[in-house]
Image (cartoon, rainbow, N blue to C red; front, side):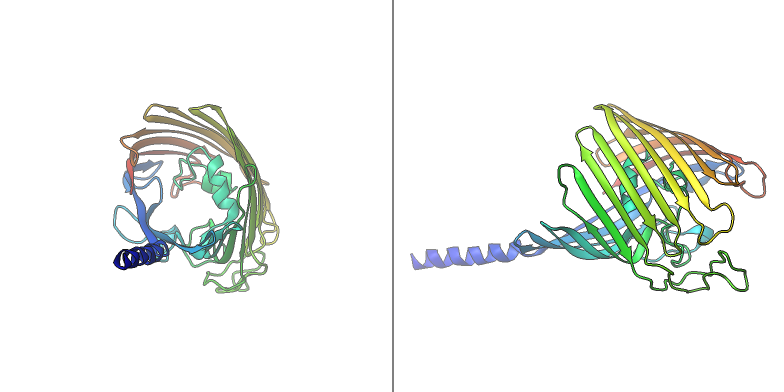
Length: 353
């Protein structure tokens, strides 16, 4: 009897220890395809970001967990770390590097990641927020705004570094999300702004002139989703957005977003930008049809108009093939041409693991 009780006690102690162990998940995706743009040769490229990530949690008891997430981004055609504008190699954990706690109070994290506005807006963009030119997220859904103007050269434009992130629990479909960053100097090149090349408004390596912050309120209940968001970056540019979607049918999602941006702190002209996007997703069995149209107006500049169509076919729960076609009019010309009507085509495969 004593041996049986001892065995039960030992088993209980082991089970309690196992319950407190960390669980770690390795995840990611590989996306590669054939890419063709106006005035450029056929290339091997990507539609979505390629990621390799590690995330985990540890049960601390009393409905409290410690969490972390690290995410590497890479180029599928070369195997190198992801490159930014001008071919500059980005940091190792470009996607995100955050650690925090989650429980009945919500989720609290510290580090680097998508801002509240940038993360929330993805649900209201027809191409799922992909960075491909066929999508609208980078140039229209966020009105061409950058969250990280003073970051390291090549950094992606939709994240805060040196930041605190907080998400409330959902209450009747509503959730509040907030991100606040410090004024730390992040190694950026000089930003001329309202200064001159010799005396830039933000010299190389300068710190922020204001604490960057981002906030969004989202509502998701039944067939309807809504978003209100506002963000101000390190050089005091501001963007505000309102967006919504409705599941018109179980297989049909319709969405709309409207954005305004104010760059008056760093520009003397062309300071205000307005943009809107209409989009639709329709699923037929393993196929998904994607369509979107949007416009962006920078005061004193040409209006940008974009029409994009996409198709996805799921070969499994983790693998799909895709084909996209897009036209953008009024965008900056691709050198050395002066053509401002740019066509984009892509055909590829995406696998997640």
